Image (cartoon, rainbow, N blue to C red; front, side):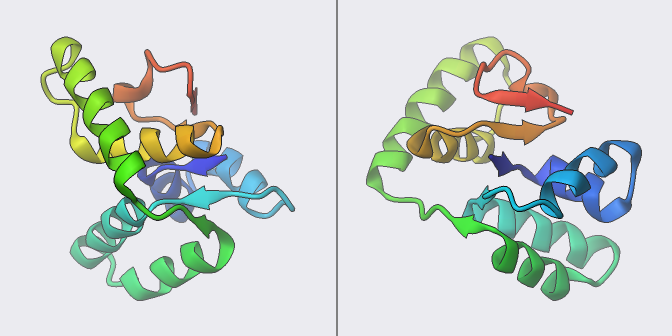
Length: 124
């Protein structure tokens, strides 16, 4: 399973949704991340609580990183182009996360409403 930025933020904030994420993070389950997720969490932490390095390190130590290669980039472009027809504010970062998950045939755990219509997503 891939935890997207939304799930990590909930986890680090200790919210009710974050409790569900905590169960996964503290289990033996294999979880994945993307460099884009690390960048989003790092940026959010720099802007809010100053714990960017600590949080980034935690994610990298707990997750297998799926590098963004040409195959993932092209799949992300296809996802992005199609989704933009339905959601004007659908971002390329979300498309990269989804493409990375599809590359490993795993689901994305999220609460981001942009993912609601994707069968690859598990909504918090």
